[in-house]
Image (cartoon, rainbow, N blue to C red; front, top):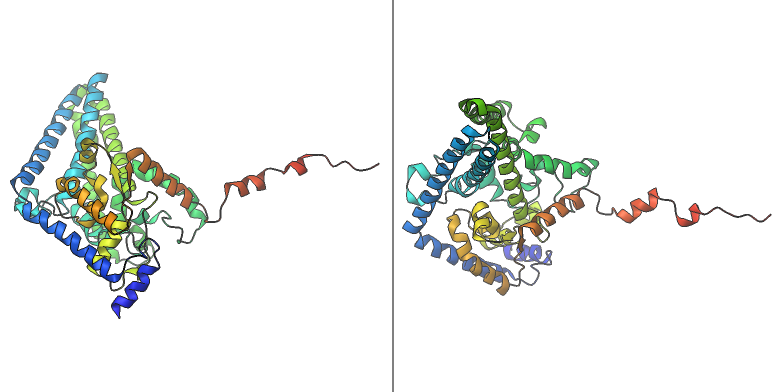
Length: 388
């Protein structure tokens, strides 16, 4: 009975209509095999990689902050700000995000473990791990279940009912990019649910206290302690920290957008995951993600989330392995007649923003209609000549 139901659901999606239930389960077994190969080969090479990255990031941050002690001089401000921006990006993306996914738990190193790591981000680790690891990665791109999808402020699919509020979503998205770490913290708090009375008040207040305490700690370090330590360079150091946090937020937001919103990425109805098998879960990750093509430096600076498809398939595998297995995943896509959605960073960013603008308007909205309503027709512009 389950197979018959799921076959109907698959047939409703033209992208997968050619796949039988058996095809999907075979696909799942192939992906399981790729995962097992990586797990069996994890070792010192991987451990050395993450230790080297953590050590390099900490030295870069320390060096950049030392340079900012002299940020009264413009060259020192520029070099220190760039270094601090890169440091914050690496700490958030290649280290924090991936460590908290449990990608390095197999090392049994308490200093690099998902249960002990706390990152430089407004959202406390425990809250983020629940909303991201447990909710988002379980219900990837399922409307009404995946709360990462649009963060509750955007229309992300044509099947969502349009309301006038969505007209402003390009603005909300831009603001969200600038303050992304705080947007994530607000999302983790599920403020919308609380305002609708669907969250226990005491529980919400407890979480809010933890978030505010984390923000206070970060703000004290970046906007008070380090500027004061800079003495005469206090104000330039303050602006450098503001700039570095802004750069980190916009970069992180852009990478996340590229993985979830470009053209070609699909969303799913709630009932489409009823009785979902492992193969079907894999298939949903494949259709609901997009990659960014580019250099090794780009992959590193994105926390290897430029391989968002591989990350959604295997969120707990070491991030340095995603590029290695990407050709195998592409081969699976090709053999099962699926589109491996990828593109350059400018292309994917542009495509994601195009989607944001497009979905801010009703499905039947046409620019030509708007112009026709606002501008008189040629006939109306000409004077009407009447016979004498």
